Image (cartoon, rainbow, N blue to C red; front, side, top):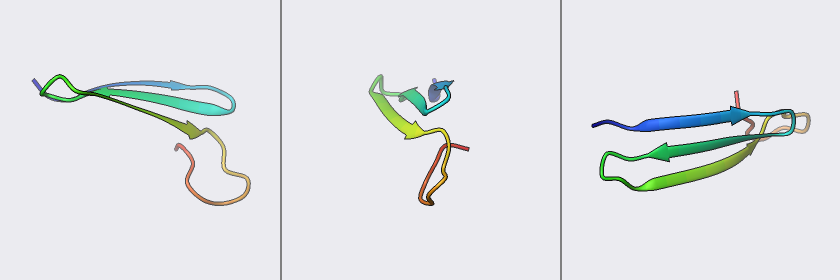
Length: 42
């Protein structure tokens, strides 16, 4: 089994959840837009 990703892009934030091959779960919350520089979800 490989990685599985779930992505919910909304107006302000993008939520990302990922299940690793070993069953581990990782989550992140990123800004959906980027008016001031820095990283934002594509």
